[in-house]
Amino acid sequence: MATPPALAWSTDNCTIGRAMAVLGERWTFVVVREVANGIRRFDDVRRHTGIPRQVLTDRLALLVQHDILRREAYREEGQRERHEYRLTDKGFELFPAMVAIAEWGDRYYADDDGPPVEFAHRDCGAPVAVSVRCEAGHDVTGPRDVVSRPGPGARPFAG
Image (cartoon, rainbow, N blue to C red; front, side, top):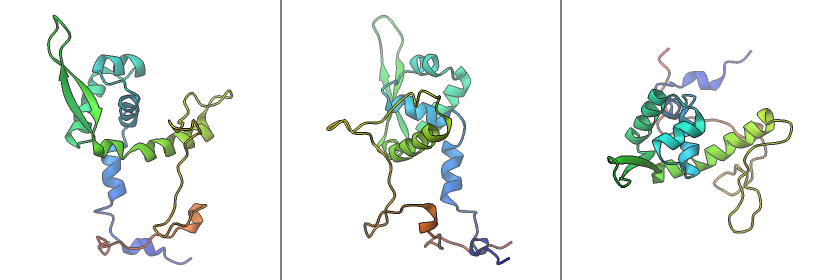
């Protein structure tokens, strides 16, 4: 069997690995989903998702630290100051990934009666789907239509 060419490249600076270090924990994308859906206050997120208090505290802090969410202070009359969370531009850029994860989950994990949430285009109401295309504008129809190759930051694997 031929040696895969990818074995020649180091994974020390892998951007997928780095992204998953921030996003890969079970509850992180759930928090992003909640905020994207307009559920921005700690108690509302906790009540809606069942995330344990300390886990939610940790996830929110991580997402703020990585500039995916930002905190905004608010104060209800007679109450102490609290914060709600909003997506930053960096956080909004996760939207295609969230739709792709939802599509995959809908395909393999939805209940028999279908997915619980659909994404629709606000202007026309049509369902939203993720598509992959190269920079030249060609649609990529499957993973076998793509090859990986060393990028500008590739480093040789020292083994």
